[in-house]
Image (tube, rainbow, N blue to C red; front, side, top):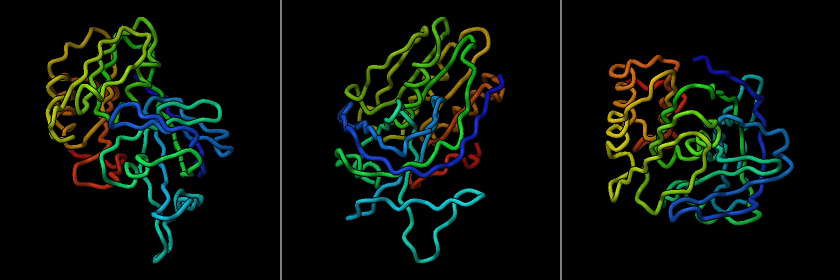
Length: 267
């Protein structure tokens, strides 16, 4: 199942808040816009950007310097950019939607909780897109609330006539969102009901119990890195799925700030 990989030139963008919408009690959707958004590309469901936030008391974020080989580290003793990775929820001409989970700590959650129209943040990326074939027989799409933007985009993009099993782990029933799709989708919401994020086997239990449809398929799962390791082993060893038919991505890790989810993660 060969995917198509598209690379883009990195372009730092300063964007302004156009709208803030509370989607659920713990999730805020921020719509960004501005002239710098011209030329933005992000067609794949899991495309993500780095979002740069102003330091306390500042109006503008510190943006990274770019050289011919990518990002240039700031000189010693100078302020460092404050950033986090976020999946694109949607983009339209002149507008970019990003969803923020409000969890009471960290620069992104703190900023999103007080975000208002006219504020400025920086955006860098995506640096590329992985375009999965949308003509397979079935898809298994799953993740926690950090992966929900990508899950939603997968469901929106998979065409009618395809079978989709989708599992989303959230805090409780009030965190469920209304999602749309054209395919034959079975969506199951998994509630932690008081358990800490990244501290359950909800996704593992659901995926090991799932009955995969016949034919050629693709699996995409994202969430807390440690909880995904047994899922990755299950898909590889028990399901014997081809490596190019599985993408399991640790978006975050308990106790680690700003996890580099591109780095190799040993099972």
